[in-house]
Length: 461
Ligand code: F0G
Image (cartoon, rainbow, N blue to C red; front, side, top):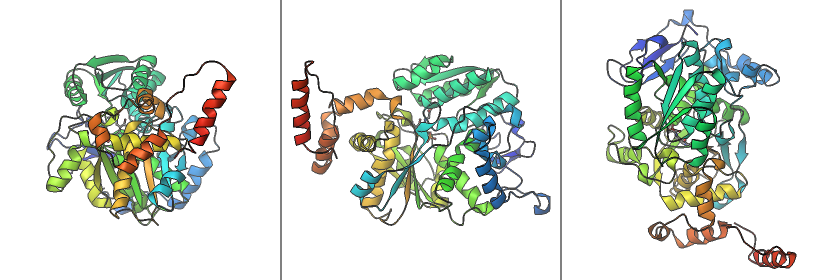
């Protein structure tokens, strides 16, 4: 715990964890930190003083912990705590997050002409999104530093996760969310878990601005993803994917891009696995943005990610409705280091992809579905090959945003111009995937007649 440092990813300044400014920005250059251990590739500690983690011993230990009755071992995040010793064990706040399934998506794979396609479903975490993996880490740090209040600005999932973990820890929490712009499932969670829920009349980027000022003026611990400890928890799904694949490295990881911390966290996880000798190559990591919230996509097109111009964000995938992403520089570094791409997808493509994932019996929230929509583009122009393995990061549970799903199936989601953007075959697929509710009188004859007509229409896509 006492051995880690925070390294500025902009100017390499190293500080002790407890010396970070409350907004987690470097005082020299304003960039973001990452957590560095004596064994990290970037560390400057002489190697004779470093106790380097041993891959074989750790693989065995991590498997062993699965059978333990200790909460900290049952957590699919803290099971890997040897690679992020940031708090003492007795300070850990866990809801047994992680341990999420790696599903096959056979129907989508067949349609894309891929041999196989996998989905790491982070929506299967305790509060229904990948944010739990990062929140358990950073909130445990808040506890160990003695804070009473924690806060975040959020498009909904971070706030749900923070509220739950704060409640478990007995801390007070405040969420700042854009009024009217987050999904109901998420809003209900932060209230249910007892958070002070503040709806600001602005967008996500406006909430971040207000929160940054608040943490500078009051002793509140900031739990947005600029907090580098969040990324330490969020790197562990990379370890799980490798474990679940018998340590065969997938060729591609496809993630949604919002504030752009998650791609950086996974990139850090895979890089550490390679550096420590668990694996001998890293996967390409591609980031998919919604067309209406695409600042990284535009930056990569315009100048290869050297500078980023914020946009006014607008997409129904409300989790990634972010115009000024905090971690964009980290994301560009991962795209460069791992060799992935940034793609954008439109509203129709997102809705269709979400319905396809639903039709696999899995489901996810709209922001997660951008991964499948983006993969279609990567396959179409040969960037992802038939023989290659791709893993989609499904970041949120389908029940986070039931309104979106209901509107899709009732044919009320898309406007005319969105429908006009679809190709003929996309529209055919869309029509086959829609399963709006059928209202009938309460008698068996009517139901059987309806069943016959549905059966005659054929099996859904
Ligand atoms: N998918 C979902 C479901 C999300 O909630 C988010 C981010 C992302 C993807 C993007 O991840 O920001 O690391 O690039 N949601 C944040 C929130 C911003 O407040 O819940 P990112």
